[in-house]
Image (cartoon, rainbow, N blue to C red):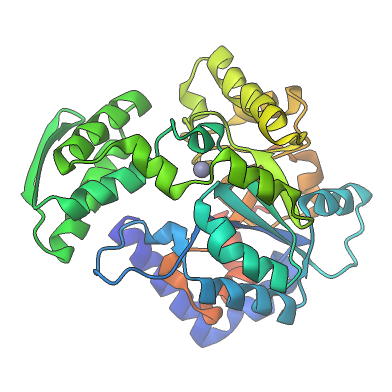
Amino acid sequence: MANWRRLAIDAGMAFFHASGAHRLAEPFTRGVGVILTFHSVRPRRDDGFEPNRPIEITPEFFEATLTHLRRRGFEIITLDAALARLREGDSDRAPFAVLSFDDGYRDLAVHALPILEKHQAPFVAYVTAGFADGSARLWWAELEQAIRRLDRIDVVAGGLRIARATTTAALKQAAFADLYARLDACEDDERLRIVAALAAQAGFEPEALTRELCLGWDELRMLARRPLATIGAHTLNHPRLARLARASACEEMAESRRRLRDELGVAAAHFCYPYGNRAAAGEREFALAATLGFESAATTRPGMIFPAHRERLHALPRLSVNGHYQSVAALDILLSGAPFALMNGGRRVAA
Ligand SMILES: [Zn+2]
């Protein structure tokens, strides 16, 4: 996350925390519910280099999140039940919370599942078929692993050479931020090529990291059998769909659902767009998800769920639980919906 953006968020959080304004705004900004986004739930690293922290929270904070949701009156329900409520248009009920996990990280089964079962909290896991195959690539994790191992990086990304020492945690953190921003601007295939070169220098195979970090099909079969689990689709290879030709985007979406059916015997009714931001998913993808027969599709656009989302079931906003803000106070502010009302200029259903 860019530094200025974190500073803006920190300032906003401090304002809400000091003023309590979010509690006053809540009746107007909370909506009928929320879909929370989680990626990795794992203990903290002890080497001071945690560049992917925005998508990592600890098991302790995950459990605190569930407890706080219920204390604040949220009912944790399945995605199907949430959609049924939206369709019925019954907005007098307690707000709902849907828990969603992206990508199919192994730590969902290792660290999050015992907590979910202890609290009897249903969840949806959006599975990337290629991660379960051990063939698709988590380039952000590879970049971290490579920089962790290397004392110096020297790459050309986006036409620019980046050569720098990465001997300390602080230097590694800065190099990661720099390269991440540069790679984010590259096309998917160039990005994967550059990160593969770094992985080779660091002496590991990208696919080995995928197999280490993600649930394989056998593990997913066990997960899918759990009564609290819903399995959703998250493409074959985790591309930015909006950058692909229509036929390729269509294949990524439809084939990932077919793989889930073949491997797990589940009919995935729900989809989640990789990256989920404007550069990765737009109106074409929203229409595609509907045409392909998915009942819903989730973005990473930040926001709460309002009754009007009944007409936008293939562009659902979510609240990402960010590892930089692992405090109940921050969570409380976010769950009021007030920060999103500000970010979205007061629009409940963002354009
Ligand atoms: Zn993802």
